Amino acid sequence: MPARWYGSARFAVALTHDVDVPWRWTRIGVRGAAARLKGDVLARRPGPALHEARGLARVPLHKLRGSDPNWRFAEIVAEERAHGGQSTFFVMAGHGHRADGAAPEVYDRLRPKLVETLVEAGAEVGLHGSYLSAEDLDRLARERAMLAQLEGPLVGHRYHYLRVDPHRNLVPLVGIGFHYDTSLGFPDALGFRAGIAHPFRPWDMERDRPADLVEVPLAVMDATLAEDRYEGLSAAAAKPRVLALLDWAAEHGGGFSILWHPERFDAASAHGWDRLYFEVIDAVRERGGVCVTARELGATAADWLGVPTA
Image 1 (cartoon, rainbow, N blue to C red):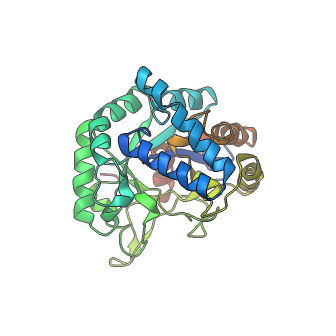
Image 2: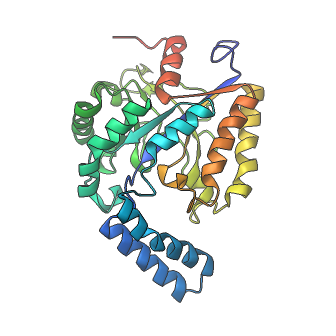
């Protein structure tokens, strides 16, 4: 392993975003928010109820402007660049299960514009393999081929809901055309699921050798920290947790990804999670690290890991 992991940087962080819901205020999105508001009111949860009510109150203005709180992709990339970072957006190309989203027809309609917006902004586009693709690699190959028609060669991947099984659906990604994956992380905790804080080559059990794939470990996900089903923290309470991980990386080195979903960048509803993201980028740089795309991190690792090139 090099003395300096990434050039002159002490550690490297790949900034990533999973585009699960590119447009919040679809018809079913509005109905869902209204149902949540009713449930919160009946359950006497004033905080969540107020949050939903404020969001619904802004729907007419968004309709008038033709805007949406989730469609902030160019703004996210521009702000990242202003803070000295670059990122990867993992875009879905198939909906075969309800976990993939409630408005697949809207995603299908918006996908070409989404990819165009990201490419023009200078972000990397990767594939966010759908829920069922984790069990159906032929489906995953079709999704990659479809998205590649819009973006061109696709080299990066992350499974939806982090449905990766290192013994079953990781090594075959090479045959589909991927150079790296960044699915291996905990949905309910920070840290390194494989116990490795650097990109590595997964083991190919069938051939009894390292696979020709780079796995970029996922160390931090916004949902892990924010969602009630997991940590349920405020952005302010989550900040020390993330900074502690960065302190560790600054001391010991490492290369890993963090995941922030695009729907957490609407200032009116983000509850500080948008600010925390950019504070994290600043904290990486202050500690001698660098923020890059997952593709750049994967390519750098492939070089010193000795991954064969085509």
